[in-house]
Image 1: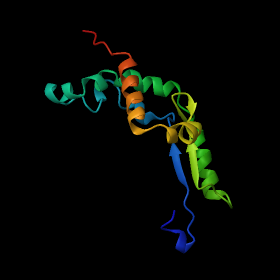
Image 2 (image 1 turned 30 degrees about the vertical axis):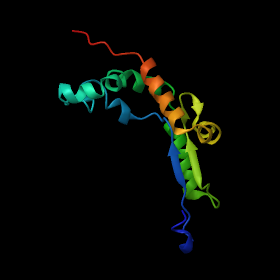
Image 3 (image 1 turned 180 degrees about the vertical axis):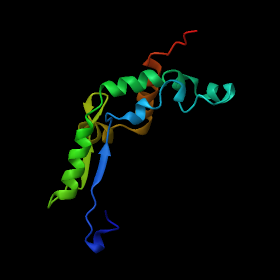
Length: 130
């Protein structure tokens, strides 16, 4: 926004949280992006990979409608006074705007990292059925 201000060009940022999308559903089952890794490479991130599908499905259940993004885009393009930033969707069921404005600024990086690690540890582990 700052770089384009001298030319009077308005820029609006769209920051979507978790939004319903086919993109996530395309990365399930055998289409998982990490399925082709060697055992050694997979082992480095096993905890994250083993819970990936369960976490993805949990996010999908809390996802906001794609209409939220569409409405924000239409508003940004057609409004005489568009917002400089559109924060859309949710984060673990909490409004993404609320989370980013009132919670994240007060959490040091190491606390945020610890929260992400705990979320990974609590995620259900996918069990292979043979």
